Length: 148
Image (cartoon, rainbow, N blue to C red; front, side):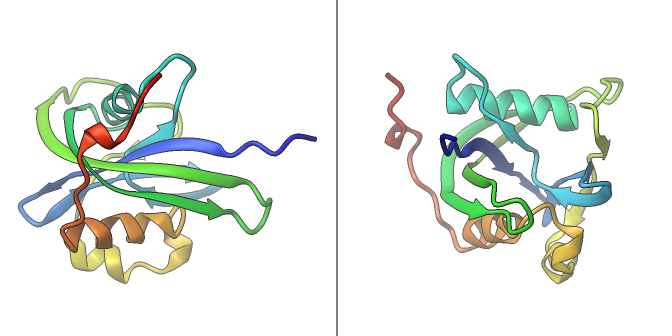
């Protein structure tokens, strides 16, 4: 069997000290995550994060920087995830839009509440890492990604 990592994108979006999150069902449990999802065939990383934010939160998003690239092996099934996390500019909201399957809500949560959450309430350890890197001011240019 050939090993293949799951390539994902995510967005850290802050407004007035709160972060746009998604509450979703994963492994039969409600957990919090950044708007995030898998890269699709023939899709750029930037296009993927724009799409995922729109589908999961009903907000438009324009990425302007990368906050980090993460690799995590999920301990219960040994799946490996590679996440490129972006930050950027929040656009228009479409409150009538139906959210993606599995998404319960797209709340804005304060930093302290998120960082105090137990690991069991977060989709993965990457959630806090992405927020911490964002808060530490980590910003890398989008042009560090080369799409061939």
